[in-house]
Amino acid sequence: AQKITQTQPGMFVQEKEAVTLDCTYDTSDPSYGLFWYKQPSSGEMIFLIYQGSYDQQNATEGRYSLNFQKARKSANLVISASQLGDSAMYFCAMRELIRTGANSKLTFGKGITLSVRP
Amino acid sequence: GAGVSQSPSNKVTEKGKDVELRCDPISGHTALYWYRQRLGQGLEFLIYFQGNSAPDKSGLPSDRFSAERTGESVSTLTIQRTQQEDSAVYLCASSPTHSPLHFGNGTRLTVT
Image (cartoon, rainbow over all chains, first blue to last red; front, top):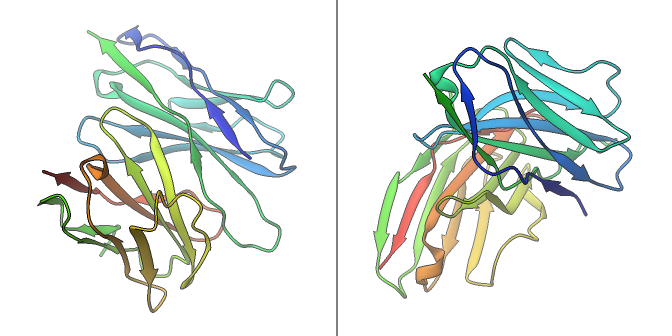
């Protein structure tokens, strides 16, 4: 079974500074994908970044980067140059990648609340 | 439409009544997912569809919950004999194979 752990309490960061949101995972699947989603107070789920388990390089997407440490089973999200609009709930998630091309469920962590201070 | 559409956006029902929640996925997306999110909590997986079949329905909390998908398109989540603990936001998502999920805005269900 897959498990995602996000244990940080509410996080605070000063505007324009960088912040790291922690995520550890557990799986027996040899091939998997890791995702980060943002959920602002409006409730929508916004996809941020994806990392495949066999990707050689850490994923980056604008101000978002994923610090992927496979041996430690961690997939931390780094947000650089924080903005007030980054205040939201952030969810780490993973799914097994099935060779046949079929999809599988996305398992989410409990989330981390980030507040950006002006 | 450009995104995943869910209806209704809000639903208030009395305990014991049945409710139907609808999801229109993005056209061409083979996979469709239902999640439940209680206030201040994470997303709880309910069921997912590959085409019209449901390979994984392990997250359905009880036999009061059921879902179907037709035409590899619209899906309906039905909750029978609603209970107060069913109050939550029900989120639908769709995706092509191995791609990130695209979420709808959810249906906020309140059982009084």
